[in-house]
Length: 224
Ligand code: AMP
Image 1 (cartoon, rainbow, N blue to C red):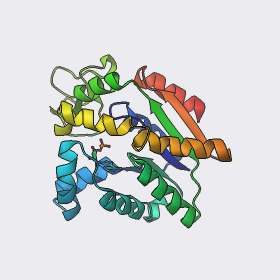
Image 2: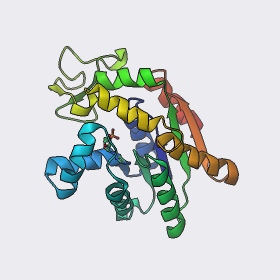
Image 3: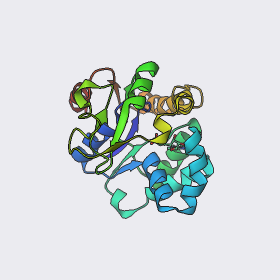
Image 4: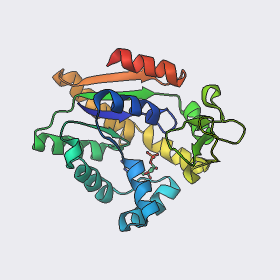
């Protein structure tokens, strides 16, 4: 199963993505996570990307597009993939579409989480990362996953914040990019929505991201 996953930063995209990954046993390719891994390993790619990421800007397409298209050629993607965080602008969508066509690969499902911009912003600023396990969700503004004091609610480890989560102007910039329906991320999801309408062979699923993680999860599962 080949899946694209869209949702503003703060919409719970990572959590819902993990559900898709488990259901279809596909690798979860997260562009942001690949950049962060490169930064922590001190690679050349990480050094190039860091300045953009810290400011909340997109890493230039010349770096991002080949990075993702190369990742998709790895053997673990042979039977499917879940792309998350890419494409992020219309150019990336077009390049991805072209590359899939060229390789004879069919896109099966697109999932879009729809969420109000202000709610998304609160959720980002409340996000806390467990130092032991990135998959332990903690958020000071979401009752269901409130940390235990200042410790991880799952394992009691120390919590940290991502620098770009606490920088309001960087969040605004990221959301400017996401909610831009002309050239930004919404433009790229609408690019595929159009294809879904025209061809009928691509399933485009829209989810309301306003309720809690469990409700969104139930909607996702019922629509798959
Ligand atoms: P994320 O973890 O998805 O919020 O991504 C963190 C940062 O990585 C973003 O704010 C961008 O600077 C960069 N990034 C992630 N995905 C892309 C992409 N598809 N194109 C350009 N930059 C990206």
